[in-house]
Length: 459
Image (tube, rainbow, N blue to C red):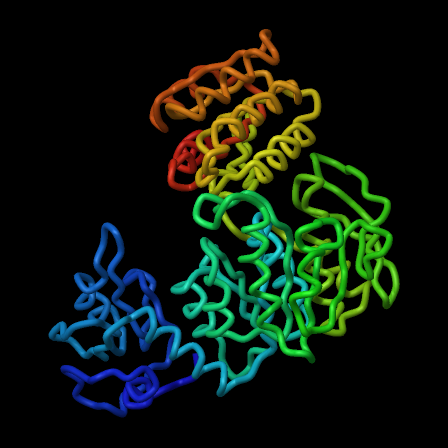
């Protein structure tokens, strides 16, 4: 965050100052929407959520060092009062970008956004000052908060952009116009809100490349037919990446190494270099190659990119997060979110990690699957059975029960259990686990299975 006076911020966002002794007082730290995360000299944005209203925490934020509060009403503490706090944050973020002009990289996709963002950030950080989306702050609030962490030294701004519905990416790219746009894939995540199927998801995701100028770069996944179809929707220069021989940035000689990890040869226009990832799952190769494509158009060479990818570690919690217990049980927490694509990847990654060890899947609901939800849960049940998991614990009523029934029908010898809730899952898993087991815990985040994974891991 570059220093700004309260007067300057008020002018940019159209705010009126209330209870401010010195309008020239300076905001010197990033903004936050969680009062517990406000840094001294920062700006606390008081937003109203479904269960919590940030205005109730304004006094505590100021007492903790906030320079002022961005709010929708006077609060008895130094405040910039606006009609809409979310809109004001966006205006402030756009103003900051105009002052510092970093290279903005936007990335979107149905699965893999956060891992790809983390990989790319770790490659670019070795090259120049980089700010990237924290956790999954990829929406209309999270994106401005990320931008407001940048300062005059920031060369690369890596922005994960989520799309729950059509128009979301148009809004986000309006706040932070990207010079580079990366589209990973098109799947079934959020299909309930976007329309009838993948074509509707593709329409929404393609808004990213539509926002690019003619001198920008659109990086498109050559292996995904819906992403390939976005080529005609952009004015920007196109670079293809993937496994396809036609991709300019691609992977070759992909192979499994130790503990479910993968290695491959990275091929770019500047040359070839070996990569050994420290992340489990063969699907991580696609994420790594996507990150490499961005680094390539930014001028990094193959060897430099490969070194960065090989040194990269998992940064975000709840995404194939591995915890080893003293009794030899391995807990894999992949419960941040779930779609058919990510459940497939998680199940296969855990089987590769386990080798000959016993495997247990604790699976809850995959949200936002619309009318196809029951069929997709049943498909996941059959996959669990086909991969020869030893135990399935299906968590929740409705669709998870269909998943359990499909698994049992496909493999009558597998131990299949159903429980009503997270507490039931934790109790049953605790009773069933044996030393040496490898356990995958996965569901959409609203189910709360991450708490089960953390408890099983002893956190």
